[in-house]
Amino acid sequence: MTDKNSKKDIPKILLVDDEINVLRAIERLFIDEDYEVFTATSGDKGLKIMENHEIAVVISDQRMPGMSGSEFLMHVKEKSPDCVRIVLTGHADIDSAIDAINKGGAHRYITKPWNNDDLIITVRSGIERYNLIKENRYLTELTKKQNEELKKWSSELELYVQEQTIELTRKNQELAELNKKVKKDFQNFIVTMSNLIELRDKSMASHSNNVSVLSREIAMLIGLNEKEIEIITIAGQLHDIGKIGIPDPILLKEIDSFNDFEFNEYKKHPIRGQSALDINENLREAGTLIRHHHEHFNGHGFPDGLKGSNIPLGSRIIGITDRIDRLMRTRTFEQTIEHIKNHAGKDFDPKLIDPTVDAATRIRDSIIQGDHDIEIECHPKDLISGMILSRDLISGTGMLLLSKGTIIDEKRMESIKRYYRLDPPLTGVFIWSSSKKRAL
Image (tube, rainbow, N blue to C red; front, side):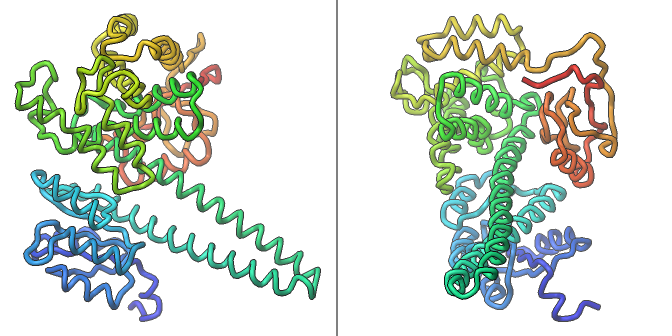
């Protein structure tokens, strides 16, 4: 039996929904998890629970009588800003979900009916995020306190100052590592979001990653600074996030076969993409690039009909790379490059054609195979640092985990082993057996 003191350390999650059967269904998912689960049938009851408990993750339905999910999450944000907030919504309620993100600061939304495994993984990630923020704050306060003590005692005992300096340095290193991990988690979250988008259209697997990698290559080739390159890379990874709001019958059709209504609906996705990211200040600039990645250099694009240099440079880059990756799925590399050159000055910035061709050629040949390279399938426990993936590593539910050509290091080996426990791929890990393989 768990005693009262130890129970305080168990992560707590709160489920809010006016439908009892929904609460029970979600609650059953976490029977085997080491969480303390609270349930409430309204926003008011949920807020009362939060007054008496430190809640790490809140999952709230959007449509509830009285207080809506977005209103409830807004109150949660005020009372407990570190609490990870997730909203449940129907496929038809994309605007409500965006409202919950904007007003309530929801970290993400999940559509009904939900995928049990995805929901469990999302909650686990939310709790990890909550614990990281708490630990970060603790280390920051600890560092501040030690600095104050150091000033107070420095004149009294030199040896003590030296000892505290060593300890402070260690704590600062821990804080730097923690901040590095938070940044890495943020990057992984970006990749995860793009993977979830592509789950709706399996034919476009790795599309977001390919666009992001090629856009980054072009940005570096034309001499953009590190901050600009980072924004373009993120925007490339999330450029199709607005397609979440497009109905499946439209999303799965070829653009050339759209009727007027379908095309008008499709043209909204860059705006929805920007709106979804605008709540996060760190993603705001990337959101602007996403809004304009379908603008054409001659002014005939959408959604705003921008022309020439009025189109943000990052959007012009992503517009080209998006087209290249889509064409490469049905055409040869040479045919794709010919298409890009033929549309210079129309769809694309003429000044970007040469660096795009150079970057695309480099990416195309990024994995060089030796005369005696052999592809083998490995169990995760048999991986060795320095191995190179010969195929994309796809999770059991269809998410891209690592791209072909990735060099395996110690951290990636641990990530692969973790994913094989959480969402096991259908095969082993395919790698090149020869050391002649290298990534450019």
